[in-house]
Amino acid sequence: MNAIVINTGTELLLGHVLNTHLQFIAREIFPLGFRVARQLTVPDGVAIQEALSEAFCSAELVFVTGGLGPTSDDITRDATAELLRLPLQRDATVISAITARLTARGFPITEAVLRQAEVPEGAVVLPNANGTAPGLYLPSAENRPHVFLLPGPPRELHPMFRESVAPILQSIRPAQRLEARTFTLACVGESVVEAAVGEQIQSLGEVELGYCARAGEVDIRVLGGRAVLDQAEALIKRAFPDAVFTSSGESLEAAVVRLLTERAQTLATAESCTGGYLAHRVTNVPGSSAVFLAGHITYANEAKQRELNVASSLFEPHGAVSEPVARAMAEGARRKAHADYALATTGIAGPAGGSGEKPVGTVFIALACRTGETIVEKSRFLTDRETFKQMTTQAALEMLRRRIIATLSPQ
Image (cartoon, helix red, strand yellow):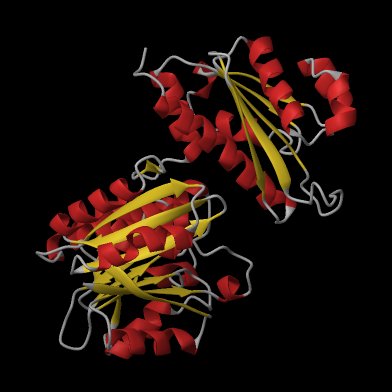
């Protein structure tokens, strides 16, 4: 069943408020068999009724957020009732709830506030435990789809949706539902992924395939029945046996922390061009204290020498951005922390500072292992400084993840 989401509020279109409703509603309804086919954001005023009129003709389910409050620009309730030619009646239960809430907080009960108790004939009131404006549900009828009018503030909408809207959706959910699976790959280009599996997955039949690329990773999203999803998953894992690091939304850093934790292994970092972002990503993961021992930000050459015992003789012939210096940084960090692994980064983030031999975007990433082996990879990420840090740390984490899964079983 297709749904349309209508978000109301001039503040959304002015950019004063971030609109997060689509993401929340789409995620909540998909497992129940519903899918957002379209989303509209409209200003306060006549555009609300125009959007409703259009949605009623093309959707089976309509969600409207915002415009249920006590001020003059809150007209969603009135616009809906007028469009459907439904009289508004004040609901005694809602009046009682509003009165109790405002009295407990010492706020006056005004006529404007009591407007929120007006309910279109035939509507089901959805209680609001976190505000004064209730939500409203109008069941499907001859001239309309299922309609939900919901408050705008997320702290009110989210609990109302889960406690009141979801049970209603459960009761009207379709018998046959699509399933979705998402596979996330690190350090593989979107076009490479499509060339490897796109045509094969499309040939499976009733399946919808999509991609979503971000800095250093790409999602493969497959929608369809369970049998066809099983086939698609097998194709993806056969084409990329090592690159898929999650199918459950886990971040790359969380996957690395999990693998280290399972093996009771530890990690240290030594960073120059990434300025601590690698350690930041790792330590953002709950439970990382069990595996992360130390992080060094050695931006200056003197700091590399002092903190990591990088030999001064390496800088003049090779430069700070080089394979020998990256190797020495990783090995110094691993020895100092007595860690199983250490990652090091040194590069030229730009926009200035490059040369013909080492252009802007050049980076060396080193991984030192307790076995005595040190791996160094040279890459080039020609982008802005922030994205450079993201892609460099992504490559570093992926280097470590692949090394871990290539080793022996957990200790």
